[in-house]
Length: 270
Ligand SMILES: [Zn+2]
Ligand SMILES: [Zn+2]
Image 1 (cartoon, helix red, strand yellow):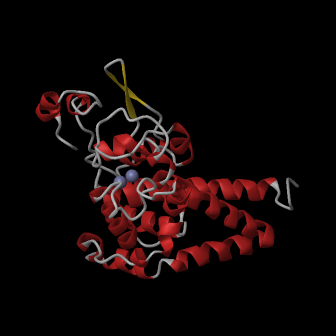
Image 2 (cartoon, helix red, strand yellow):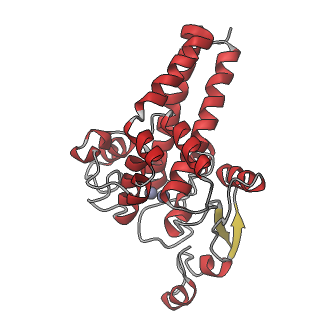
Image 3 (cartoon, helix red, strand yellow):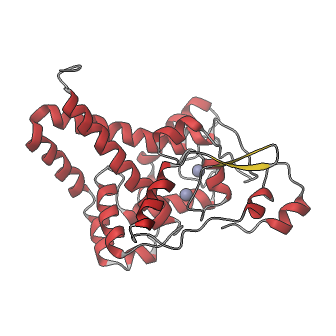
């Protein structure tokens, strides 16, 4: 028995659920459904979205609609969850971490047509609470209150992990690339989100399947990006294809501090 009545088996259950559902959120909801940074068979979309929905991340249409609004209006008043426009810093942080979910704009004005066109994805979107409840019931069935507690702990940590991309990764970290917003590369956020904390790279190159990059002494350096490694594994199994990565030249042309002339010549967002 470990702490507070939760044993090692339940801790491993919590950890496995965290990793699996985080990967579904980052590799499927974010990099596949929202940004189309690679292609995959429909079965991968459906299973991945089902797993991501079980994390309490809402449905794929909801997720994509809000996330694209974030990119379109990053760190302006129209950004649904920026931490930087609020006059009181700590309130801005709380709002970006979870307060924005209580806003009137919780229900997006419009839903992405491509997701809505797929009847399975539309069903997952509308019934997104069922996978959450189903996984909770499975946890209870396997190990009673102990495993249900592990599921709740995993889901709470996962929620705050994903939310830290919206909050911390727009407040703390370095900005190797010019993006015109407050997005930052934060290694701690990258650690708990399996690579999504390289958020400055992501804002600079939204369509790139790989986010783990930085620049040191004028050279492009790769950083650990477990979500990218997972997508490469899918590719080796034939479940992912056409992975999009911008050229080194295009990335170096967007390095913060590079001349405008340089940016114009090289920058072709992926
Ligand atoms: Zn962002
Ligand atoms: Zn994004």
